[in-house]
Length: 540
Ligand SMILES: NC(=O)C1=CN([C@@H]2O[C@H](COP(=O)(O)OP(=O)(O)OC[C@H]3O[C@@H](n4cnc5c(N)ncnc54)[C@H](O)[C@@H]3O)[C@@H](O)[C@H]2O)[C@@H](O)CC1
Ligand SMILES: [K+]
Image (cartoon, rainbow, N blue to C red; front, side):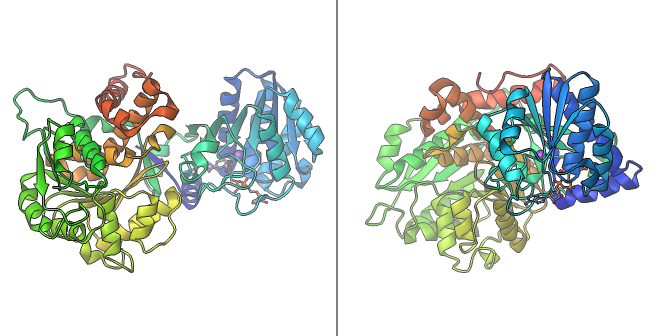
């Protein structure tokens, strides 16, 4: 797992490294070297380095110096003369570089800048890093819009300039990078909001030999997990196993209006490895589900007049629920009063429980001031996993805005900390999904845009249920299993897009490739672990 840091955590880390004997000036030299090495790998004949006023600019000046010494034709653009750069560290390296074989352009006009960009093979964006906040001031807004218009090949230093490294919000003009070379550890804003889109490929320069030790001494906003971190959680299927010991799931879902959601969640749970999946659905749609899923038993529960769970549903469902390793409740269920009763009944039981979709909306309706103000509703002995997307999460915290990764993590933590339970997990779904536990936040590999399709959430909750059911002995590691499930879902997006084309994927395609996705994740985890090199690339 790789730490992902907030801006404040990065500052603390730099201070600690300084205490250990490596100064910020040395870190700047190392950062510049790292950027220069990435630039060199692209063999540019001529490089343009855009430098700002701060230390991000300083990294750019160092890279410019190294690249010119290695034979590239290097031009540096700066808003002020090197002697007038306010940051002492950056001023020092700028003066040094300007005295060497680079062409320095101070405050060029837009036309002059456009000409410089067009003449170069590669642009290094060292305009703004973690020190950027608020509205983008001139001349940088003009520089950045010129750069994006021309569509130059760009390496951004630390973060794309114009992106807030904390929130991932972008200014009106924000560099669209091909590659972002982030220093020491990725900043949380690179995963949030506009970050993933504008950063392009992300590589991290560790810069400091004892980084692993020192980074453990600062808090981490989150940790990035990739398949290699999942090796411990992927177990081979033993031969002497029966359908029940492979893990059982009860899917409480569906209504006359939305029977498909129940079908997709149940089929996904089975495809994700559960040996025995049962659907409990209102009798209004039970037969339809039976016909669609011949391998899955369906228990018909009395409906209300509109085809949702009726008043008798709670007692019937709560009686059968404890027989399963995990219960998934919510897809396509509606928020009728019978459904609200079912959710509160299941919460009172001890069975490991996943609440998704309408079950979350039932929770939101049952707590006017926000679920974080009424944590007693969620306190229970059994494990509890909530899987809200941003709108559902916002409803759970009484309408407080949730619009990006950072606000999703904050809202999830408010709920978890109010409940104080280490048996609880919020999987906050979004373009980047966060798996939030009471004491850790995991960010699994994000999937492609093809996952943004109706029913994709039902597939994810089914995958989570299937994976959690097969992991019943490992309840100490819910966040890791949650991250594993989210990764598998992401990989269904890659695999389905490879078969169907990114724009054409529908949720049922994702279900059909769950097996492929499980295999891809397993291959990547095992190959990386055994040093066999890169595994089969995602869906190719
Ligand atoms: N994290 C680390 O350990 C290291 C960080 N270094 C670099 O240092 C950077 C941070 O340096 P700084 O703190 O000097 O900050 P930056 O260089 O990111 O930006 C600070 C400058 O940006 C200007 N600025 C801020 N908001 C603006 C706005 N809205 N419009 C226009 N200008 C604006 C300020 O006037 C200030 O001069 C990192 O991003 C990284 O590139 C490296 O030098 C070495 C190691
Ligand atoms: K930058």
